[in-house]
Length: 330
Image 1: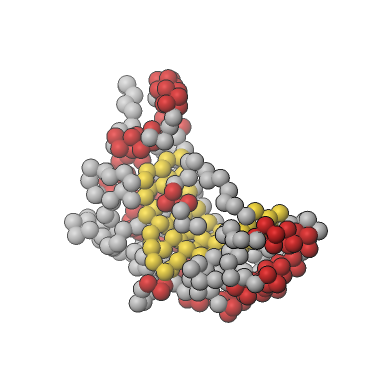
Image 2: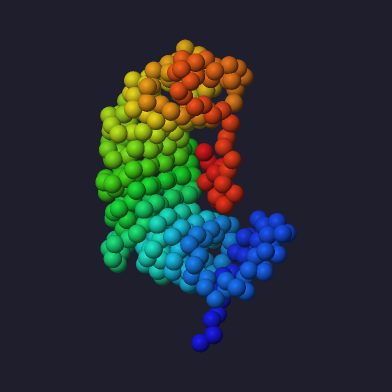
């Protein structure tokens, strides 16, 4: 039987080829004939700002299900209107080898015409391979509290909320229930969303890497996080537009075992910044904002650590294949 190439919307290919140089486009065209007979070798697929002919989830599933070897799938801003829990469950069912899934969520629970009304989460067939889940533009209530039962072996959870808690009158805080079901979580990313005190008691002790970009982090929040995460090795903390300020001096006492630390220098007194030299296990420090005299200050800090500490003061080069929906957030 003759092989038919997978029918993805033309907008997908336009978006992909738009990132290639002229030389790369000719290279792709030259190699396509040789590779078209084995498209299932595709393992990573990013679909961003692509509008499918239908707002039904069926159009997306029909496209991606042809790539059964996919291990990483990013689906952002596609105009799909379906209940989010059902979306995750359907994708995991048709892509059994998927390890990383990144989805942007929609403002309504389901479209009026949707055939898939919200309901209890059912068990996914077999043991899901998914180890990393990323939710973009999330709003509390879009996913059921038991949704993480679909992915009990998740190692990484990243939730990029659409709003900070200061922008909303009330939040349901789905994170409390989610984190309680993720007993093997090792990496947690939280951007905006509920105040830390709403979910800190649910943080799994297994977490070793934490990214916390939440407005208004207090000294009590830091102490509570430290108590919950005794094995934390990597911390990225950024309460912008508020500031850590003098709380920076408490980090060595609360997290003495850290190997890497990312934070802002703005509004941090020099004596408090230099307190970071007390962290004997710290190997890497990244300063997220480049302020006047920063080079002089980091030089003092490195001297205090006997040049053991590596300090980075400018953003690293972004992965050209990474989606800007996430890269622009933190």
